[in-house]
Amino acid sequence: MPRYCQRQIFAIVVARKWADNLAFLFMDFLLSIHCPQCGADISFEEESRVVRCQYCGSTLHITGRSGVFRNYVKPFENIPRMKKALRGALKALGAKKALISEKKLLFAPYWRVKGMVYKWVFGKDVQGRLVKELKTKHLDQSFPAYCGVDLGLRSLGIRPGALKLPFFDREEMSKTGSVMKVELDFKEAVKQGSLLTEVGLDETDIQVYLERTRLVGERYNIIYFPFWMVRLSSGRKPRVLILDAVANTVTRVLTEEQWEVMEARSKKGRSRVNISKVGFIAFKCPNCGWDLPLNRFDVIHLCGTCKRAWIEQGGRFKGVRFEIADLPQGARQDVIYLPVWVFQAHITSNGQVLKTVADLQRFSKVLPSGVKQGGDQERFYFFMPAAKIRNILAADKLAAGLTNKQPAYQCVPAERIAELKTMGVFLSPRAAGDMAEILLCSLTPRNNRERQDFVKDAKISIDKMHVLWWPFHEQRLFLRDAICGCGIQKGTLDVGC
Ligand SMILES: [Zn+2]
Ligand SMILES: [Zn+2]
Image (cartoon, rainbow, N blue to C red; front, side, top):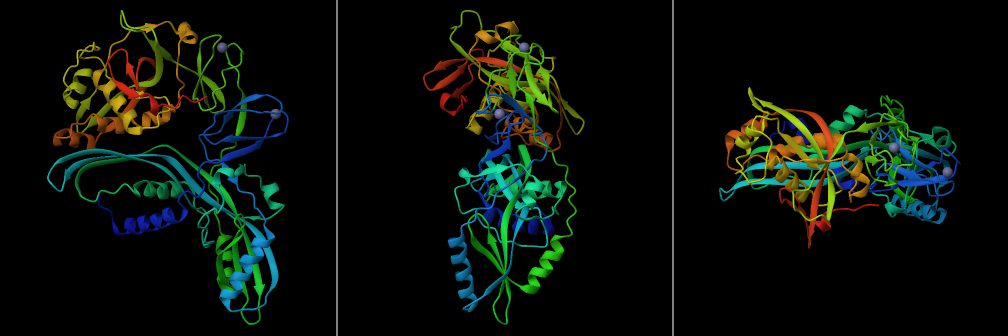
């Protein structure tokens, strides 16, 4: 168990409470927006980078994804259900009749954090055996961004997959309800999010010596959820009922005073959040003007005409350096190329430096494998598989395998890219860089405290990142790397579309 101070423990308990209550609240959903070309409604998966309007046929790249998006859930009014819910609430209050004296709709903001959590643990188990373990989980949690109110939301009550979430539009939302203010700013949301990363990855019977938890590829968004506020006058005791405006069920029953206190507090929002506006750019090669190939989830877009690679950054395409590793002499020619982010890392810890191929060999204590390497005194590279790989442990093993071997390779001319069988790049360069620390733990020996101490205080700066397409042979259920022999199960790779 890591050491926490009293306040942190309290915060974790609160975070846990939210995690239990709101688990799977928003899941994966479709975002919807008007096509900038023809105005028709287009919906797309939130992981999409490229969308195609099925009405006018335009293909567009989404921009602004690196910032905070705001979306909202539309209310779904089901009068019979709502009446039933109100009758039930009245019965529980012991009132026979009541008049609805006020009914209004509120849009309450929730922060939603999504990402992949990696946690490395080094230590000893109860039998005294050394432990080196990587745990992972998908983080997808939400918590209120408003304060002073508990609207009692527990779950959506309908299949989340069916939800289409339009982008925030104050004018449109104000036609039906009032928009509550955001009180929890981005910094506080990140703090709350980092507490949620720990939930469910506890160590119960391991005496921990070193642990590293990292949230990778994280995205913070705000989603406004609709509630009905219904004021009932029933004789002596007027009540305010809060209803989930999608499921049409009562979530809270409040006294008049409780409601007034809550309402007054919720109006004090500070709203200090920089919101990123969703935008679109034409999905054409900025160099030659030809259409780029439509692969919805790809981060890197390869122009088949001028053979250049592009990534969207800050609303425009920027060129990305890429290489294609050549096959060893005499190797089978039927290969599939998997993308790998390759970058140099400069790692320091307590005055020690991990920089060259020789440093890395000393550090990881992996015996030479016979694979041809770069010179001892050359800088070493991290190799981070960038295809969509469902099995995180398998991806980590492949990353550690390639990085340990530091293979030397020749390149084939970039022009040949169009004739090769390549898989798309799914991992963003930022996420690849964030994983450097996780990969350093993978390379750390289980039985070496000195190396683990080095990792504890390690500071990593990364440099010179590029994409490398690396050849693999199909071998029954596996893909076997044609240069160093590292493998990965075929079934764990998402070929995408
Ligand atoms: Zn259109
Ligand atoms: Zn081009």
